[in-house]
Image (cartoon, rainbow, N blue to C red; front, top):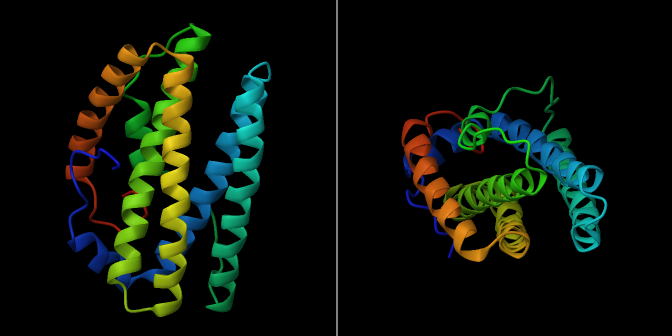
Length: 193
């Protein structure tokens, strides 16, 4: 369903489950960034009414997810601390050459967002199935469904605003690029790392 070319190495879950404090902290910042990205689409493309409507709802949902993760962290005595750079996202963003074409930038941003959501979905599903902490397993079972919807939302908009055939070629190339990145990561207790 997600189209990911390389599944997460199962050892990632073992790494993550041994340091749930780091996973929750990293996850909280991922939700903040997702909300911020949705707002950025609104600010940058206010004339695309259908996009603005969906991104408004998404920004609210992502902040609700942040609140949920933060509440879990607080109950466990975790203080978030400072945000850390997300190497996975930085490397994914390097796939597309910078362009001055506004529509092309939109398609690129939508595809990157779709990919990040797809990988998050896959990782949340793994956490829901393989960690012993029942509260977190149940939480991640709920979230992975949301992430799948976000993935299809972004990919759908990319296909709507671009030429379907061209978008699909870009998407497939991006998926192959991401497979190489994911083969080099997965050794840290981060949602994408």
